[in-house]
Image 1 (cartoon, one colour):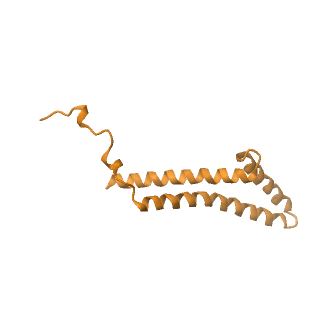
Image 2 (cartoon, rainbow, N blue to C red):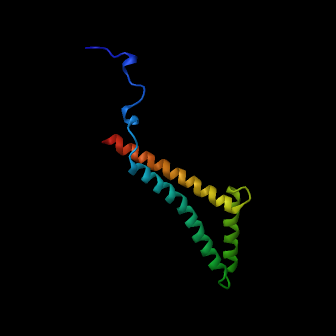
Image 3 (cartoon, rainbow, N blue to C red):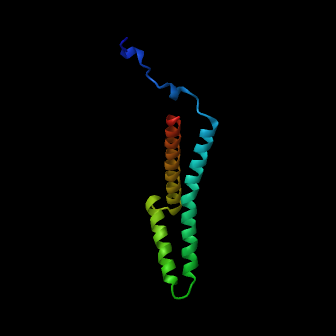
Length: 112
């Protein structure tokens, strides 16, 4: 039985040297796009709901306070600018979605 030497072991796994298939890059792009758009859509729907609620007599103050909370939340992530806050939240969710997609692809490739 021959012993393995440290020089016999590859420095890089052969699986890492294979080119990335186009469907992985497409999947990564879709995950990033959905990850970016989803939080913006949720914030937009919340803003629409709070605006609609503020027009209802008697509970309009709830809608106004909800709008102030949403603005403060976006201001926090955008250093005082709510639009920048929305972009930061969207970009962060896009990166997390792409990381999750990469993990899922790597686990499915390893299980084959």
